[in-house]
Length: 291
Image 1 (tube, rainbow, N blue to C red):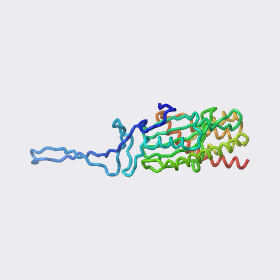
Image 2: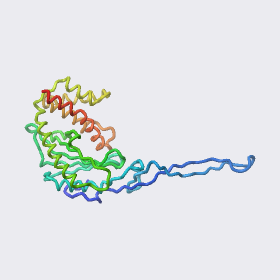
Image 3: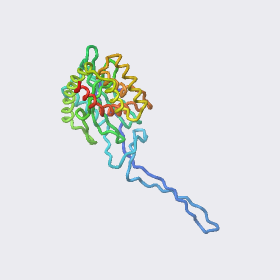
Image 4: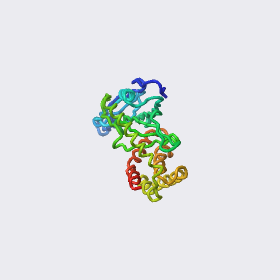
């Protein structure tokens, strides 16, 4: 684990490289006269022109990607993003950094939390600003950052709709720091705006039918997930009441803490779940506006 008080530098990350892929073909041919001949095998190695391998510093294949895929090294871009954080108007006092990888190093999530930007949704129920920085070597993610929050009572990652809070970077070899700084400062504004909306959640009543419709939309055809959401919701209703805050935390509890099939891929799974939660956030806003 990297020291949180030590600024990131390129050497904190392994570097990957590209290598061509080959396919082996074995041909068997009859050699010699019919009566005295024999079968002869010849092996050919042909380069695959459509794909290439991404290799780590120990020679392991991390992923197979298309020939047009441009690798963005973690060490080239994440330290630049961290410098942009320090250049922005964000208060970095006691800022914490956590770096997690999944899929054998193919996906990286670097999460920053900001205790100096703590807001109470209700008395004794505080949250901190959280920014997640994502990069991948398998084509699953572009380099991007997502703003959210961390509820301190249960460590749920509070999700903010990505249509107005994310920063997507092209797969280039460097970061446009000025653009990143601008986006970071916008992220702080978005966080503050959403925190004000969240303050309305504990006093916004939610019926069982409204909650069920949200869970059904998120779970799709998974009866197991639907049942899990309903069970979790009952616990939050007992804690905070039948309101939008209980409903919201049921969703973020699932994205942050529900059982993980593959513990080595937890970081990526949380991001995938949060994306699913984002898709139902408009339903929560409809409930708030209709109250």
